[in-house]
Image (cartoon, rainbow over all chains, first blue to last red; front, side, top):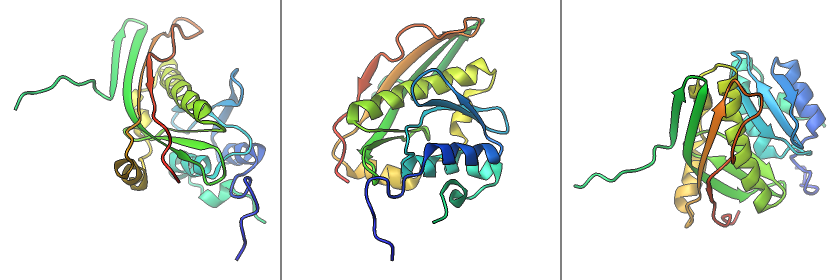
Length: 82
Length: 132
């Protein structure tokens, strides 16, 4: 069993998560606010989110819930393999 | 039984290119397992994170309204806010908690303008976060 290692445990780097979303067809637009992004799905429907680095695990789950089914990817696609 | 007037959780009025969106959402605010805080909308599946309580509340309010504005600017329908469903665990945690956080917000948007107008939210009535 792997033990938790600290506040980053479970969180993912923002660059990795955004790259994974783009790879799966989500349009990612950086907005003017700090850490503010517009994510647009296949249908053209946007969500504006503040995504600080690192991306907390609750946000990872939300991103998968919002885009995973429509874009046909797994939650594990948003997490780095160790 | 007397019928009480209540604010609908999401209202959209349109006059020409001008839109008024009013929302009254219940929000579950809780500590994140990774540190910081998480705010999860209950009527609408929208989520924000932040390092502090103030930050997560601000991120939720601003982000939710920015999402509504982005949807309207793209000529899409606000029903896209319901493309994902709130997990039942969030409702369970909200019902079990002693505190009932509510976000009341309103934005007025003229889609002919490039920038949104006005104050992003009128009232912000979050409570202290529930224990993990």
